[in-house]
Length: 452
Image (cartoon, rainbow, N blue to C red; front, side, top):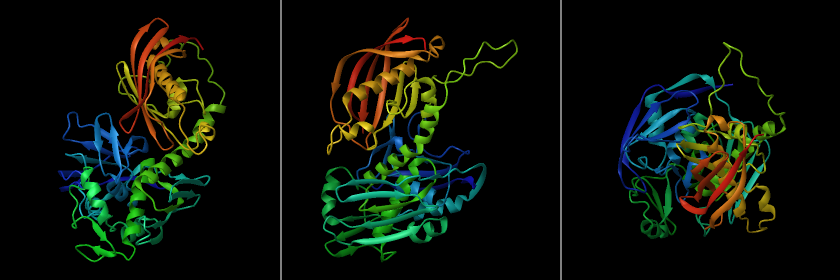
């Protein structure tokens, strides 16, 4: 098994953001093993970081945006594609604005930064995820599939709504094929889209210096096309970047027809759910841990309570705290604990059991399950107090419940809960669920703690 890799030294680049038009300085820095790729906003107080993970995706309209708390980083896909293509597992990307510089619209400049910095192996092993069973997602003319494969292969067909400039390309990805066949492909747009994009606050930094424009049957560019199939190759570049949000290298064959950032991220969520299933099953069917007697004098002290300020909990840690299991575990990850407040995530996949009947042809997540998610997150927060460890939180009542917008497959729910009252065995909390920053449900919940 191959080792993880990071950068040997730092490398920097300055330019403008494609959509924001802001001037930005960007620096790539080495990072310890198992860090992954993280974006750091050095222009904001506290220099907040966002991990490049699918659960942090907040927007996918014409680019991929990561968000955490009040911090956002737009148009991350090209930078992520460069790291993934050259097999760099761990790095910090420092920015002094909300979007990386677009450079020439491809990943070429970022690859040069990585080559300048150099790549070094680390002691820890890289653990790719191999797709176990085929997955397929379809939305209109967009079709995304993944099949088991012993490498990483992408086969893609792209075209506009009118079928113009239909292109096909297939490639087995390696650092060599990535650098030669994909990394130089530039972003592109159709002339008739420009007015809409400008009116919606996008492509403020766009020009023929960093994008190819298609008008009718003419291709407008400040240099000849770099590949005969440059448009579909750029689509593959985007797929590489978006799927890197799994946080692990992928082994599988991706087949994409008219992909978009939305469909790429939907597929990443579906693969992520498949990746987590064996872990959930292992926990579900394992016998409960034996009760431990009090440690003898001089023995090892009890483990630290995982529910503490600043902690992040993955699904395995969540299942050590809550008794819920698939399909009624409504939390995939706790991303923040701070005082009486907690924030968690739920990735809503098309594979959720309730979509089969709620409703056929129009899948919507039941509001009561969003309410259950709020209650489960509140139950975790109650475990901050040492005397509550090992207890169960029974959901008792809900007040001021409001369901504002439907939650559909592919959405990521951000669940924010604040404990408003805790007296003895009774707790009350206020919870709000949001998708892409917009509230979808909210409620005040009451629960009681009991012994297991």
